[in-house]
Image (tube, rainbow, N blue to C red; front, side):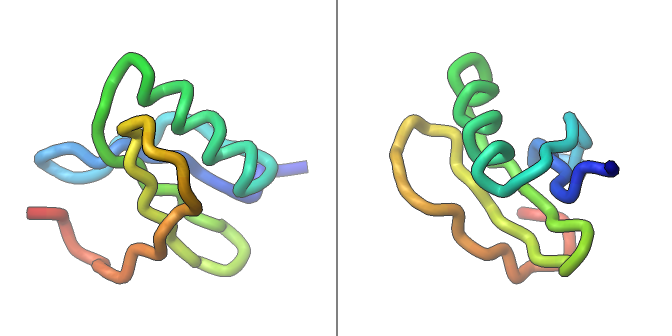
Amino acid sequence: MVPQFNVFRVEENGLRWLESASSLAAATARVRELGANSLGEYLVVDQRTGEKYAIAADGVAGPPAPWHNEGPRP
C-alpha cells in the first residue's frame, strides 16, 4: 500500500519532500517530532484528494490549516 500523505518542509526556495505517512494524524504527529529539532512550517499533501495542510511546527497544538496558495511562499 502506498502511503496517502506526503510531508514537505517549506523552505525559502520551495518545498523539500521529507517522507510519507499513512494518515493525516500520523503526518501531523511526525511534523511535531520534526519540528522539535527544526522549527518552521511544513506542508502535508493528501495524494488522493490533492488537499494541502500547512502545519506550523512551533509546539502550538491545533489542527492543520488548509493551504490555499499554489505558488512558492514569500
